[in-house]
Length: 412
Image (cartoon, rainbow, N blue to C red; front, side, top):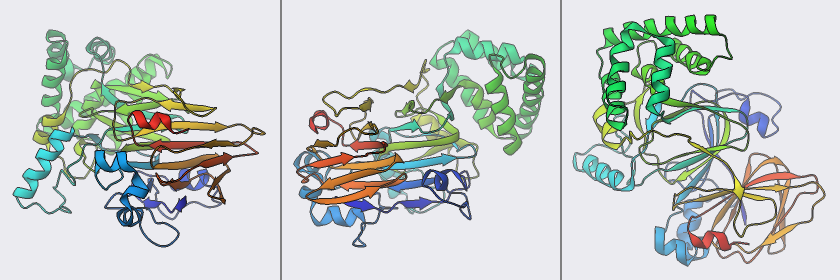
């Protein structure tokens, strides 16, 4: 068991206060803090108390740190990355490739001689990037394409003349083909035409909010359109937002993003767990590189009826442990609620784990060593650890990330 020092990512869409507040800070950060990384990713491995990166620690003893099963299935690398994420502004509109497409794209860019750190590089590695985000505060996001019948209702409510041809396109093909056709038109629209349509859309959205009020059925979408257009007045992502599910997560709820699902986080604080990858294909709402043909190659246009993932009791888990089931083989995420006054919980890990505390103080004991961890701190548990004990006399919340697969359920 070792404490992990997070890698701090200071992206512009982050918050100066959210993560410092979560961690008990007394003053805002000097710049927006967007993410804390806990893992062994090549571009930002967490540091262990002895000064080594977690990647170096794993490389020194792969079987002891990862275990025989993980070593055989995933090689000598940790297959997941854990993050604390705080968004004060919208992230870029983006999607992540499947494993096959990531391998193809990475090899193709290597063959063309595109440097790994080039601004126009799409594939930083050859891995996929499924991810799950659990809300710690109310969390707002755009996630996956909305079923067409509901998008038609939205377009009818806003009734923007410049969007009527696209409304008719959707009505003519109310499935993934129609969504693909309209989205393709949006992201390839000439700049002048795009700016004019967005201007009309904003006027219609403001008119809708004025007439119908903030409790109207499409008020959240209308507000989001206005907010995005203020920052990106001629960006295709503003129009794309009309096609996506506008999701509001309550604390403890989650969303899962599989390969090709278009999304943009808008605001909130959450725990995010993903495959160990940094592959992002962007479609808008960003000054960064946008590659529309490559994005179209990876996108999944089948609509998502309800992208929300709700926790369920963890099968074979610990008392108070709730799981967030996903199909991802790279990780298995659960949340452990340690009630005030409850006795300690002891279990045998079935593989490597990252334990991240988000509320209260948890006392972690392993091989006679005890360390107290407060919000925003994490512990690495090696696969060779014989037993772990968690205790929190005043109560605590701990997120437990393991490698996916049948063996994960046996860690108790």
